Image 1 (cartoon, helix red, strand yellow):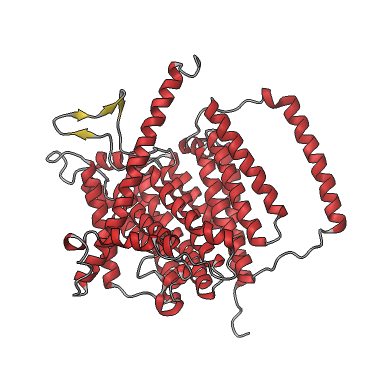
Image 2 (cartoon, rainbow over the protein chains, first blue to last red):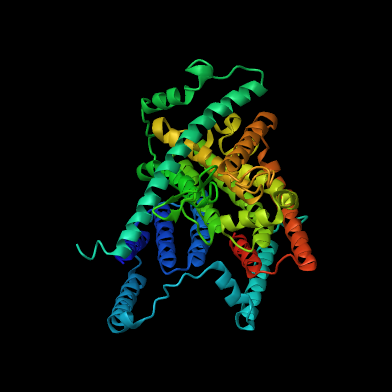
Length: 166
Length: 374
């Protein structure tokens, strides 16, 4: 399908370009906005793989909720532009790791990309629900994770609360 | 060339053509509705406040929106000094795009059935008045509204103006706070329908009988309307632009067509939330007298216009909240009320056995996820 190819390469290029912008920009607010664009193009990829539910959650949780918190911090603290200093040793280590990762992903693409199965059937939200809740396989992990998140929230409130009389 | 004209590609071509025509028609209809709304809002406000309102241009002032549009076109574009050039330009664009995209999944009426004609079909496909029927319809609108916040935050930040920045920050804080209640008010509807698809929700309302549906979902409807009012920054929740403290809030520095785009995004958002309420809580295109009068898209528009009128009515009646009152109301009244309703409704469903469907739990999880991360 020619349309799929166009959409895929379009989304992939936007994702890569905005991903590069995230680390290349000096002003933190520009980086944050580039990251939002990256998240949204990833959502397009998920939607193309037939999992609209994951695509929507990607936008709601990452592009919507988490990035808004990032922006809040940047705007309220009024972070200035990053001045020079490309981080010496850490920078060199990062470049080395990046090269290794690039080689690894090229090997993966070279060897196995064509044989990897792609799910073209659309996964509905009801399918996701059935997968999660009708077998005990994922149910326990799911409930445990939600309790973990709840306790983290309560913890955050307790830490942030002002003590009375101080 | 042979391959391009294969039957499969021809089918895709026809589908695409129908989709493009639908998008063009609905886009322009919404532009018309937007300009009509600006006129109606000023006339109704004037009527409620014993004024005359715009009544000079055209018949009863009906051409006032056109005059305003022409005026805004010829205004000078001002770029404030020290503004972030790209973001200043991008903000209205983000606002208007998210406003329109959210409307893509709203059904404006089921399959189009005309009296004395029957089901209308084009190229053998039954015609329904909706751009895209998504499996995750309601969640999609939730996601796009979450992105819509960026339009306002960007506008506030890029203007390099302290009033604009305060307005932007206020409105984003307000929008997250009320998004929680907004999301929770949907849970009972999604639970009853067992689906996020808006056409399924209307179909469930039809199965239940419209009036039963409206009565059962009424508490959720009230919570939704209050939260939606805050979500689209309308009075009494328009702290983002409260002119008594912040000049004009996030759009202080905007002029000419950029200002018009921000205004347009606000009105289109208002139309979206009303269209959504009409479909989810009031039975959309279902006739209020089932059996006596046929179902028709006209019912959908009547319900939506009534809700838009309610928004204007509230604006004329209720004074603006103070910021702390707004936050108190959102977090200490509205969210607990929504949570209680969700628990009560789930209890009803469990004991009276309406339906046990997996999307219930998915809905709860999906709506809990953004809350947990906030």
